[in-house]
Length: 134
Image (cartoon, rainbow, N blue to C red; front, side, top):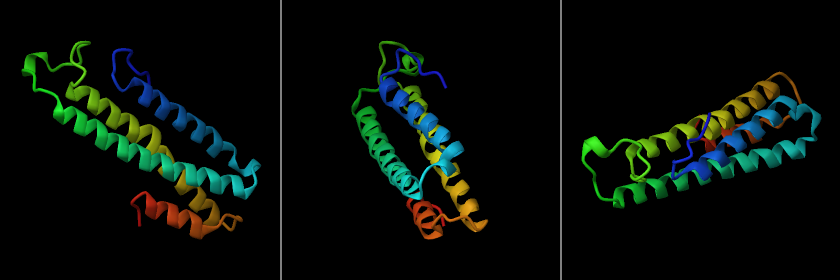
């Protein structure tokens, strides 16, 4: 989605959107690449999920350290960079562009490995566990 210009997290959100788009492109064409490239992408996805988690914790800590403003002024105004709505936007962006797309990619790999393809199911299962799945 479109990232608003006055969003204090816009650079991070732009990075997450780019990551999601690149992962989607790779997922649609990953059969063209050697398996070792798939494994590198899986490691990159795991790292991105960890970075998202860490960055979200930092954003929440920063937000919680800001002074509270009255409800009437807590909308996403250019002067209120600590607005809760900005935090919700980054959470939504992480969920859709990183976590969601990584999970879909992993599920696609698992389906391929269950269908008799040459992907290592152990790798996709460990990746799913890293994402919090079973």
